[in-house]
Image 1 (cartoon, rainbow, N blue to C red):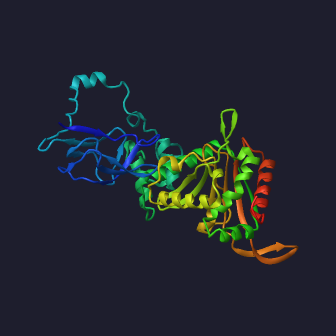
Image 2 (cartoon, rainbow, N blue to C red; image 1 turned 180 degrees about the horizontal axis):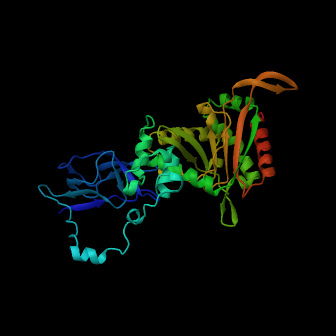
Image 3 (cartoon, one colour; image 1 turned 90 degrees about the vertical axis):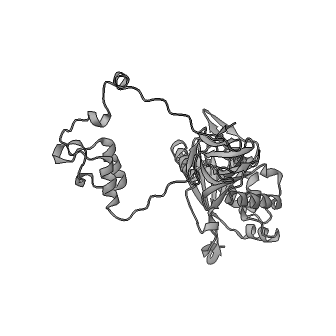
Length: 381
């Protein structure tokens, strides 16, 4: 008996997945619960097991193709069994089609070809907007539509002849990153404040502990401040500011597919060595796309070490569901003032972005001052 298997929702809010690799060819026998297909979601790359044992009769999409949740993923049946998709519903008769047709036609058919003022070419507002987005001089485009109207295809063709271009389809992860950052920027009134800290104490502590990830040392010194300043370990929910009394620290990880945030759960319960081991484990899982969804969401505060990729200052975007993010830059040797004299030294560049709905500017500066003091303290705070 043929069993149809539809793509399940394997993650919160999943709408689609990309087929990475099939573990069985058509006509091949698969065992129940054995890996059937590897898919990429906006969170991770995972294996989906076969729900039943039998022969693979149909694959709903091939490698590299995108499949929507609840779409037919696979059909598994008995040896020698044939499977055909259900026949589509019969087309309506001409009379039925005429009766069901709308009174008005399609929008483009209904647009009158009235000459545009000033001799400008005729085009719909959406087409003119597209021309602006693609950098096309709309007034110089020859229209091929009815009455000489400029169509979307005309604009895209003009853009293509304006010079070499390459269009790259976003991966599910890249689309998710883009959507979340755009939403955060729209919804959260951002403020970014800057500071510098002498990294001598932090770097000495890191060496003394066997060189764990720098983020582990910084988190160890940062955690007490989140207790003192609960607004920075919080979220804005309606007309309430929710102070989180647990400390799940997100650590930005640079991966080949894009920036991901791995979450160190209950960071306040671990020492620097434990934090370092967990950060190393999570970063490896994020880069190999084996991290679970829970390991990539739900942080209460975020730390981004942009110094690891050569950056200094930035304007980090506050992740949704939190109120603050700290970016730490590269401490290169440069002229600094020490004891009233200019010398060559190092300063740790700090960029702190926060949600202005929950945190005032004075509180933001107070937190930055406390950060600098904590990072410069000889034995931590």
